[in-house]
Image (cartoon, rainbow, N blue to C red):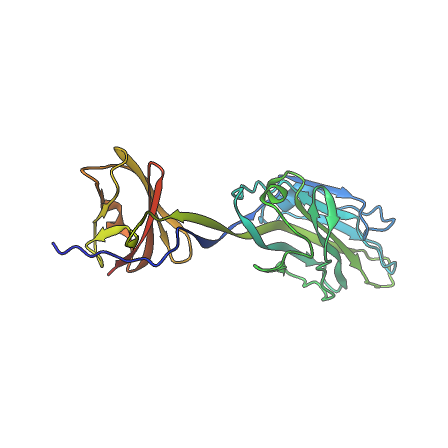
Length: 286
């Protein structure tokens, strides 16, 4: 069997940035509250728990005719995120599934993120009229931080969420009410993590992780410094998604990684930690 050594031009310490996301998650807590863009309104959405699932059961608000009635803020929080503590937050996307009653003119009156229990950042409301059948409005994107800074703890907190309010410009002139309906609220968070990779040094430069055969179409063998009897092995695709995470016994400084047999064709990064050493190698599956 031919052994191929991959020379990886890395310094003593380098970082791999992996882009990831969590969600869409649903809120565990939903309340009507007064907020900066609800003004003096007393109009609430009810029942609030109906926005936790997209199931055609709605939290509704009934707007009086010809009175430009806006709602209080529907605040959805506690989305149950578990962003890693070493992550960098990259963007936040809010989705709201909603509809307006036939013939009405209903619009957003405010859409703001909730950080540490308070509305903050840039308002993402749209001036477009709501449709008369269910549709999803998306606010933000994978690189939109909503005008503020974030830590993983901010996102994971139970008081992280979104505040939403609507307004009716409907005037039937006959006393008929307009109805705004919310079916679901969701949030997706985009973030990146970094993995530190320590390479052993010698007078000849950095020693690279040996992987063979490489390219491979199945199991591979890793050559690892025999500092201990076991090691941890992780394998990531080129987007940073972790596909393999296993503990392995070493045999005379080698490890058989048969889990790679399930990988599709492509390029992968294998990271091995043995004792105080952490090595990385590029693996090609064909």
